[in-house]
Image 1 (cartoon, one colour):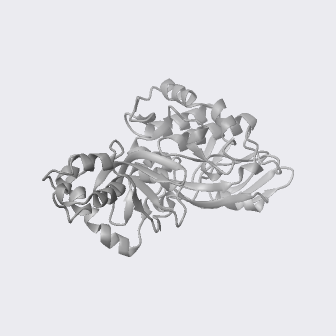
Image 2: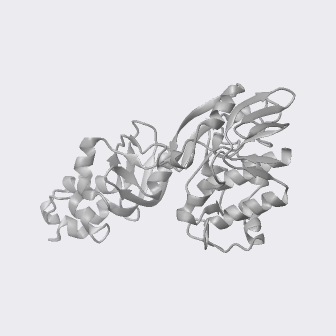
Length: 358
């Protein structure tokens, strides 16, 4: 068995994941955590190789780990431990690894013939595990998509996912004073909703809740952000309507002080607001409407949404239905996980499905 890697070493994306500690799976991974044109496709692979299966492998290699939050599992030490574990498992299975090996041509006859800068290789089964377009600085390319097209497989349109969102220039000027503020919020877009921190940046919005919602955002769509997910703003404001407390001071009990003061720069005592004015403010607090202009692109995207159309593949084996011996696994397939270890679990599960078949 031969593993061809075009980079100078394996596991570069594992290396940088989770701040260098690799969020290697999520305890609660299930099909609802994945986005695909066919939401049922991932069910088979995820059921046959679960988070507990990968955890057992981690424990077998005595890698210490912890749950950070929401089922997200990280190494106590370094992501290098996961890479070493996978290399050790590969070595035990007799896998040969060739790095700095660039595939120049793939041909198919009775077998596959690969022409590379290190010579020609022949194989009966070819597994494409090349990832998507995200983070090109570590070597991401469109190779997997090119191979799919070469063999006549359909693709779902690709786009950056788990990515910061950006604003148009005029909106950035309006929100400039809020840059750097982070707060807990509930973010909605279309039918999706996530509650985690958001971060206002000099280019737009980031933070876990924004990365999550970005996979569901399409150009022209508006975000609805509940800045007070635990509080009914209208009731809270009306309860304090007759007091001398300034709006910004009251909101500083619920929001970062700088954020409250900048968002409501014309703050005055609550008793000087009309009821209708307070209702408008409440609407802003519980349903702040922002329309992004775009995303930070593949440069900052953690994953690529879209990819090889799942209708082209067997959900049990990840094999191409119309090309004997050709398999696609992981991010190159149109299955995109949410933030928090789900994409790694899809990589392990889809890889296991293909491996069992090969």
